[in-house]
Length: 408
Image (cartoon, rainbow, N blue to C red; front, side, top):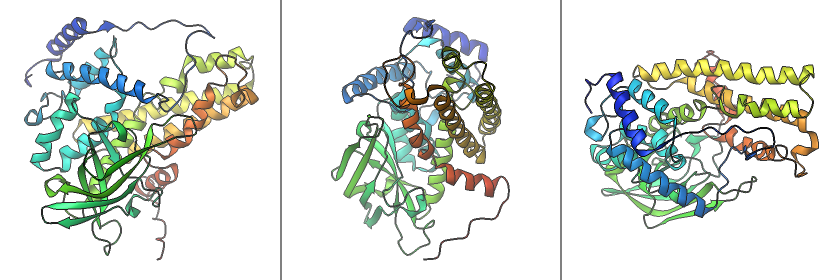
């Protein structure tokens, strides 16, 4: 592709490709009690189902990339199309009209890791991984959280010790989505234990298949196991795979976190679509004879209004990114708005369903919502806890003083 193509020409080319390789999406019209009542927030698939989904997603990613419709706005030097974000959004809107495989396994790699590699990696690493990530040849995960650090990313203790042209990484990470499917991971390690905790960190790209890497699934309370704990025992990482300067990993981490919050908070659910304003939620209220209840109606209105306001905040943030600026505190607002609206949903569900939310009566569209309820704590942690995001918004948006530092 070249940067002289018009949006009209691009749209015709995209339609031609999709019409030749995918079927139009047909939205089935289901009444109450028909079809699946699955509304879980977290994937609840078996390993076999995950692998089958990844195989289909990889085939589509490769076909799409080879046709020039994958990393449309990416730099040509690293395999991108060299077009604008408007072209990317145009293609995304067109592809949404077709039935294509879900790309869940690639969400973290493309939404969080790839932008960080592009911003901070060496040319060698960019050449090695960016095209492969966008073509779907490899999967990436994010290795930030640790058992002893909680929400304090600067408190991580996984250490990286310099050994000539390599680093030896030893420690443990936790809540790593998709680690068991990943080929590489972005990891933040402590490289100077004597420096202030924000200043002694360094980021790396680590081979998830390297000797010394052990991945164990974590069973969450929803019943699924989409998260993992990952152990590193003197895993060797080339210095060329370092992200940014030594002990400058905090800046690297912030790049990833802002893109993560953009990916989570900018999703369909926070923008007023998806489950937050789905007709199913309204039909749930009607089915249980609560549509005339003024308190229930107010709860529904609050969910809809907050979802719509969040969508406007997201549009502002996306416009900022489109102009070439880095995601800012708007993404923290978007992510926090998402989880707060989910909490409003669980309040509404409790009011409408009562005991049916936690006791399976076999009735369609009732107990299934327990999966949503049980998945909410994970969403309140992913991409920064609600408490951390409140602090960011208070300090960076409202100008409030920082919290007092904890004295050692």
